[in-house]
Image (cartoon, rainbow, N blue to C red; front, side, top):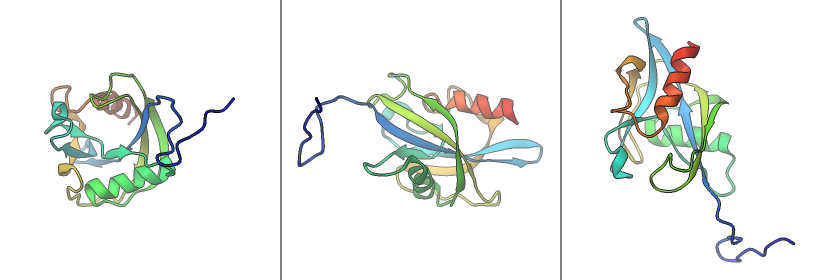
Length: 152
């Protein structure tokens, strides 16, 4: 028997994780792989100032493929295309705010794009993978950096 949903919020009484998306765009410069990254703002405080892939929450009624391209523009000003699923990370403790299942998409961008921080990012830039570490990268994004380092 299906649960009835709330006419106001659409809630159905089930406690479910939220879905997030992250755009993984890379380029080769001077023999190094660089990733398009944002430096996080103050929320959550555990990640303030740390590098992360541009991303955010999927809105109700939004396709994750559309969400990842929207978030990329909102946080970096860079337009992307051709998102393809790279990885899914969903450990219940991966986000200090709540249980989030993260969809990481490879996204094509113009390699000469000049990112500009927007939304909740305090900066956006192309960052060499070799400059990133567990100390300066937010959450589990180092796992994805490891995937792309090994693949290229």
